[in-house]
Length: 312
Image (cartoon, rainbow, N blue to C red; front, side, top):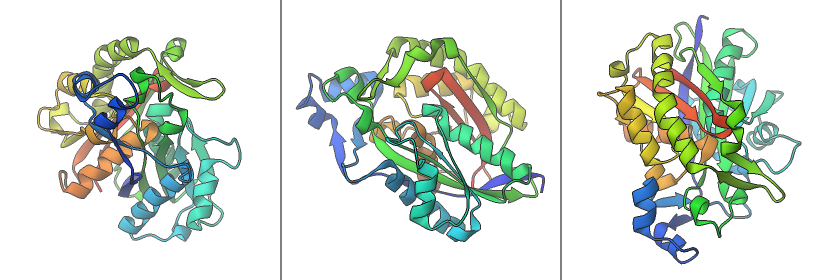
């Protein structure tokens, strides 16, 4: 086999929806203030009895069903998350246990908002190296667990959810070469730290970095896969903020692409945001099988990772 491909995707969100009007009753904010600054109208919030691995397992089960695969067909489970409560067992092992996947390699990847695209690249490399034949790649975060619900600068941003992809060996590459990196000296710009752990960020620093430094990097990811931005059928960026997504997509020059804007209804779900938005585009029929799609994650650690994939 010369490459790997995404065979199917799936997503899951908790039932509870938290609106801007609900938040206005909790902190000093309003629907107008939130939508004008970040473009978010609603977000889904998991309950205390819905841990991260449960969200992940629901999304993974949907991806497996869409791919027509059984749990026993999977030999690698990768979960991108930054909201695991326990150090061990890791989320990947817990998801594998929930789904009944026997004897997989099971690893968590913590690159915060860029976690899924890092995990996807890792699965692609592993499959192409022959160390795995079929991988389950999941992005799942429960940001509500690490949010200060009295801080209006952060609580209006976040949501919970999960997205998953089944990645398997293929004759022709369906996952393009990854472009990845970080700015570690600016890791303080996005943080989940302390006791209890709390999400915090330097919003203006992140905005300036994302809108000025990332467009040329996203173009490089396209070039590595042999595509011009205008060839793309869709662009799925980390769903952080519409004020970041729209300028970045415009500067990229993907003039013919559908641009995912799931942040409006899901908020910032960290590692879940890209597979969640991608799965929704597939489910809605907004893109077709074989279409080239740019996935580009960025954020925590000021890390980034992107690749062009073929739509399943």
